[in-house]
Length: 428
Image (tube, rainbow, N blue to C red; front, side, top):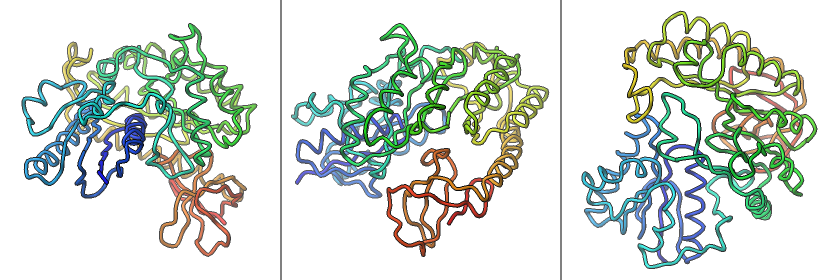
């Protein structure tokens, strides 16, 4: 049997592309592996990330590592796809000729032609999951129409393009038949879903239709944009038990000066009002957000304002990253990268220290509560689970002793929270 190794770098949106390609290889009779520790397939595909400098470097190092194996005959065909390849095809072809062919983010199905096979259009909504069998990511759109100063995503992915509602629901039904219970809806910009295809914001309608599908236990929303936020999704969260009270809303900053420099199309006052509206309309909601530190012209006053906002909002989940000068972006062409890396990192560390204390306080409030959890895996002395407020891989977890009887991976249980740390909960 021929073998295919698929290696995925970057975000869950890349993972979905890899899973679709894995399904195609599987249908052709290939034995398919994902992120194997020692890839040696007849076909090896690297799905790259090109978002920020660190991600680009990781992708290049992986390509070089596999190119060396290709040169020594230790693997068969070597193909590269994804965001880095989309953006730098010509440069990569010149620098790494050992790669058999480079593909972008949207023509990767042509890899099948390169090995003398045909793409199966009838399988377009099917995937071979690389995640545990009980959860999956569902990509509802591609691209982004926003013009944030620092972001290269629109350069890579192009304009926002919503998938058809019926294609998405068909994919969800197929995944339910495979045993998937938890669905994480993802996009570069969830807020804009439907604006192109249907000339109206349709995130709420889409979520309701997925919610109606038998077997869908949890739906979680990732990567919403605060400007032109589709407020009707809050009603759906409030009314539908299988729509998690969880929202990933990337805010990036709070001072009016920085929001304007970042071209976020929202003010500090509007941001405060949005947070209050979300919390008022969906009691107990958990908000995940992300902040960008060290954008050109950011100063200590901006950081103090951000710290005060974080203390006010008390986000249940928060991440941060430091600014990277990305060629082709508005910031790279119009601003000087005038803040050194040590200062960027210090600012990031300071806000994450604040968040760590907020996270501990929020988690301690859960002690004594009974929460529905799903079990992801067993690790040492604990079963590792999550609540509806925890997205896979990026949020905290719930630890349940392995001497608990009758526990199965991928099943839901009611658990009493008995202790809490900054990010994880302990339960019985």
